[in-house]
Length: 112
Length: 113
Image (cartoon, rainbow over all chains, first blue to last red; front, side, top):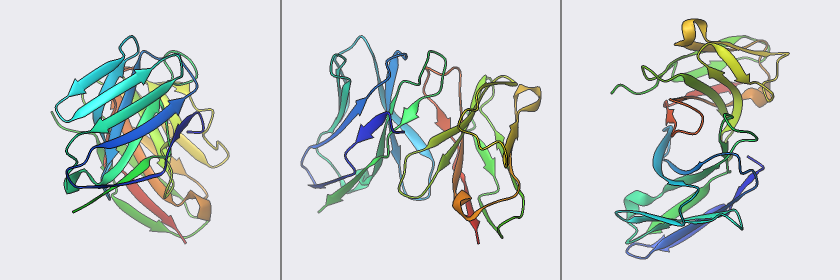
């Protein structure tokens, strides 16, 4: 995942908003994704955005895409303790049809 | 729909031994991936199959790792011989295609001692 970079750790208080940022380098894909991983589990698809969109909102989740800067962010409104997990950004592979590249993950800790 | 099934869930082996992991993807998903996730890191692609053909295995250590997807459905990943640095979670995922969202299995946690 060296082509996808994320901050490694974020701590917020319950009820606050969380913003997780990601930058990517390749641009061969049309979708970008956010995955969530809870301890001992596989990755769960959280949300995605099509590359011709700037923003996508899905309940408490807002995804912002700056295609020019290759910057993706995930905002979680009203963060709950159950949101504590590792969040992975997944960006385009090296060429069309190739697998996604994952970042190292951002560990989100929500404190009461 | 049933998810991606992986087995075993956990495996502990000694170095230089061999081990095999099995994955059953979601029915109808043509693309299957094996990822290696070392503790504290993101998933790293080992191999990508499209049906029963290999799309990308550029990061698969072919001197010790092998994978196959017979009949374009189930897949097995083998390590022979294992090294200490192979300790990781091996994740299988499937999708309709590379640009669609992936469904991951729960993974196999391998410990090499």
